[in-house]
Amino acid sequence: MFSAKCKSKARLEGRTAIVTGSNTGIGYETAKELLKRGARVILANRDLEKSQKAGEMLCAEVPACQLRLLRLDLASLKSVQTFAREILATESNVHLLINNAGVFACPYTLTEDGNEMQFQTNHLGHFLLTLLLLPALKASAPSRIINVSSKLHWLGKIDFDDMEMSKTYKPTKAYNRSKLCNMLFTKELIKRLQGTGVVAYTVDPGMVATEATRHLTGTAASMQKKIEFAKKSPLQGAQTTLHCALSEKLAVQKGMHYSECSSAAISCSAKRKEDAEKLWKLSEDLVAEFTKSGRCTCFSTVILILQKSCSRKMGLFRNGTCNSDAKLDGKTVVITGANSGIGFETARELAKRGARVVMANRNMELSKRAAEKIRSEVPYAQVNVVQLNLASLKSVESCADEILRTESQINILINNAGVFMCPFMLTEDDLETQFQTNHLGHFLLTLLLLPRIESSAPARIINVSSSGYKSGKINFNDLQSTKKYKPLGAYNQSKLCNILFTLMLTKRMEGKNVVAYAVNPGLVYTDITRHWSDRANSCFARFKCIAKTPEEGAQTTLHCALDEKLANQQSQIYFDDCRPQTLRRHATNYNTARKLWGVSEELVREFLED
Image 1 (tube, rainbow, N blue to C red):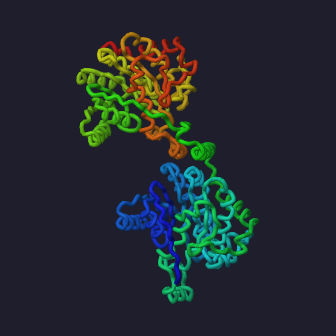
Image 2 (image 1 turned 30 degrees about the horizontal axis):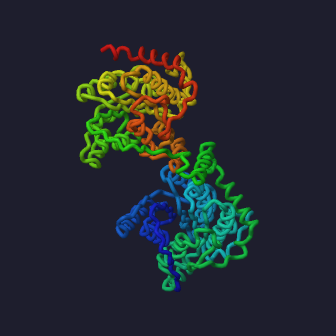
Image 3 (image 1 turned 30 degrees about the vertical axis):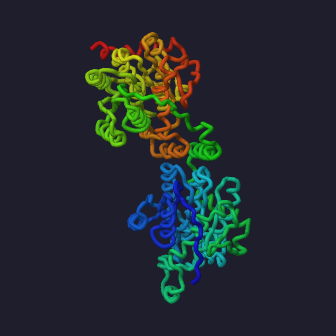
């Protein structure tokens, strides 16, 4: 049979595509072509074993393929929700959503959600998937949604009073109805997407030789075999999908339905605005419990949309860059929490500039791997690793002893390590974990290393804080939060402690040629949320596309460590996006800072007297 071919030569480097039903047939061929054009492709299939085999074949045919496999069972709305959450948690962009999967003329079956199988698999599952991924699609605009329909939508009829078809079920009738649903869904979707930079199309792939007819029996199966010669190959069947996904002319909404890579007519039933609105409302009601994710999801959606409207250059979510060209040959830097995230990026950059870098981390195995990675990237790198568990004052003392034994000078100390919103726990020293890890451990480490830092002057101390300090309150009557513990409140308190510690440190270092700064790295996507629940992490992960990378998050730390102008203590000690920022009044209270220093000193006294 005649088959048009997609003529677009568009490349897709840096673009991410999701293709449902992509382990065989049209979906497989679509995925292969997108991979050839440089896209990162996510295969979304029910059978992971088959998906794995398909992935192996694709990578064999496209050696440089960027491929990911995820399970998606459209006959389970819970599975659709789980899939969408995983995508939002781990993918910074979604540029193409191709709703290709489907089932054809299967026996009457109800899904686990109580819906007729073809209606849910071909329409409702994709409806929910699209709704859940819309924030990411909008944030990634220009983007496209392609719903694979069929000419058989012309024969489709929807009885809104008998959606389950429990009494009137006929396999092909149910299929035709589901394809009409694809058309009406897309019609209403286009209306709702106006002005977002997201376009939507339906396609008719034609009569294609695939596994879709596997449920046919008897005469119907026999007829299919007789016309096999007239069917398109899966590659030919994928052409109209590819045309709608790739054609430069279709980046702006142009029509709705395509067949043979050209705009095609649709049935009168597919044009009914009232039916499109009614189907949307019905579908929305059927998936309601899977779209309710609370305020976190709503806020994430707002942020994702903001990302589209806020340029990186505006600096609303992004950061300044350290512009210093300073070299650090002959200098020694100690960095805590340097085996990943901001600390690792800081260590790598300082090693590139010639510094001898001491990485002080709790997990020695990860620390050694991080050091090896830096050495592999920076052949001349001088990197040493020492163990430091900030939740153990004894470990802090041992770490300081080791550093003082092996390092003749310390020119820069970067107190970077931290823990974020963990459940209430007391350390081995009977202190609240966030207070000790984020503040007191670094307080003790700094005091123990201070004589060596002073003798290495000019020197710098940088404490990584957070904008959370603004909400921080220090309750000296319950500093360990034993009476009332809130994870975020405890974190904010610890970050305020970082600021007040820095404030007092600058006063004590006057005239000693040692400067101290506190920095806010900003919203950075790292593993710091590891103590959160899966749901909370899923919500936070939606910020990934607008959060800073660890490399970006390290810039303000690097600025304060390297900028020549900051070699002498400035009047402002707090930096954000490589610029000095005025502190809130409660963070500049010397009486509070002095009291915190005294309390902290008392808590670590036995380790200072050894």
